[in-house]
Length: 442
Image (cartoon, rainbow, N blue to C red):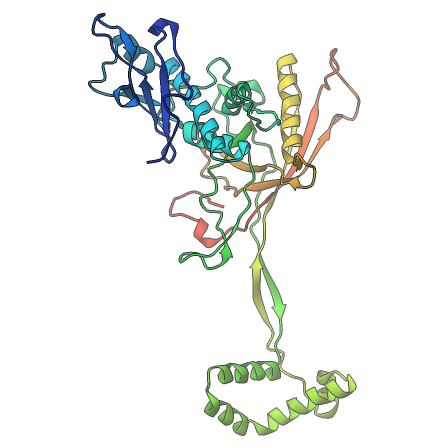
């Protein structure tokens, strides 16, 4: 299997563990981290270690599953009690994963991977639960233990920056919540997750002959931050399809049918159709020829000369799906300085997230962030309100004087703000998107 790292890359040690040299190797597919030490047991000192002669002699202390955050010790490795206790603890696992983050990122860059892509892949490998933004992370090693609002992006960025690796300069927002009491009560909420946009590629395979890559399976992307707010009033959804009035005259239909038979090689069928409908066909052809020669509408010609019109065969036909849009309006009044700070961050979170990004050379503009929206009831998906597909934030407006007068607190923060936002889904809703659950669905 391909791995990142070696005994000569990303070495680290701890004073409380005798400054023994440790290193990590990372499975490039599963992200499993193998913790090793370039030492062997000291034959003269019980519980002591000395440098090993080669990698084959190095001690393998155990492995860490990045999804569960669990350390599994390797039997018979000579691991000391102090090592076993530390590397099984949240602090030890966190430390090893941060070191593995550096090793994975540097190793990928050495292989020619773009720095930003290497950073993204590293987060997917080492911190998969945090990168995907799942609620049930199963990750006992919290990379942001010192600050519950810190995003794993910030941890990775600080590690990468120490080694001169450039990461996105856009602020990592963490999980913004307003009002703060929403963190502790059971009120239903709406959650907005800001994600890195991933364009679809052209692709043809045995299961997909459309020529365009499906969006299914594209959700494993970096969460740039989230914002949790009370569900506002006036929420609704509207599903629609494009059905339009269409016509096709008998002459057009007959021409199409004859062409179809010709393509299928059914020349006897063509001959029979022509001989059995000679008079009707003559009238229709005559009208079309006169229209081509004089510009006179064929329907008008038949109405004037024969007192008939072509049967338009009018039908309401399906013309394609329609994209849905959603609008939300929130009015907020911060009650203290901390809530005011969070509210300003929320405004920046949405404004900056919807703005296009300039590339380093300034030649192109990158697509803005996209959004995952979700209604939550007691922390779980709300079954009795609609679901959302991935959305774009199409408009965002702020009314700084929603009460009709200019009013601020002593520090200049407005006493009230009204936020209005409009989202549009990136793709239509299809019948296959509905499962067999008892929820409202899309």
